[in-house]
Figure 1 (tube, rainbow, N blue to C red):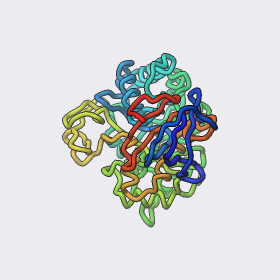
Figure 2: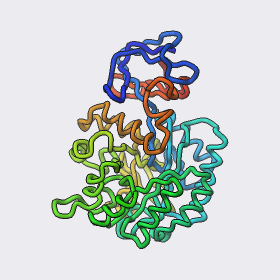
Figure 3: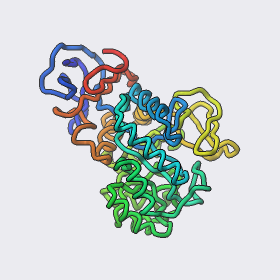
Figure 4: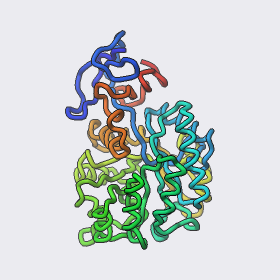
Length: 376
């Protein structure tokens, strides 16, 4: 296949006028039959490294059918790689979550490719637990993380940590030995504590600004510490609810497009009607694009926007499309260690492609070179 007349995302140059060739499931130098896509944008399939669920299913339920439905839905939305996040739960349930992920990976039953597991809990602090269930909060425990990594057969790629908790620095060292990236979040850590964690090897910030101290001129907190360590990347929920558009613009200016990771933080209510839904042993209420805890309308529980919708929102806030694609496709692939084969449209990489029309609505999805959603 050779897709013509479209603008193609290039990591270095932004969008360029050229043909995109696909052969044997890979991006190629030459292609077969030409397919015209005038006015369209061709971008790499996105990678969501922090979301909890969609279409009525939640990763933390640890059900094979549920995970499959999530993978199928995400693929239909141009999110071709997923690294779903678990909640703050007991070790038994977290083990089941990890085992379910490993079994799903081995089965390879289709849908978006499962490229990792994100453990958002339980190593968080009570004061900034947000929508997490405090009954299952746990001090940083390297041995527990190691057991969960074994249950996941090496699939755990990310873990969120409250850096002020006892044993946090030792936990970071243990996580690195297990091949897990530590992300600071759900934390009351001040600037110095966060800097110590980043110096020890933490490399990310979980949904920046949410569930952490504010960024102020005398107390810059986790945000300021993350900025001062160039190797640290920051997650950003650009659903228009969690972060004001002005702050989204500021984050891209402050950190630069290569350090921002767009995430959806989506819940099982994504792709579903308004109403009440279970959430980590609790209950949430959804009205429009806002999800809050039942009985606590001031506490956001996550988003009901998938990552492709978040990308489109970021652009509507003034972020250049090429920068938003970098944050939603390139950067998460690098963090998860899959960039050698995914995350860009370079020749030789897997042909996972999202085709957007002039309004940035999803027109088609190619997965391993085949059109699996929409049409060209």
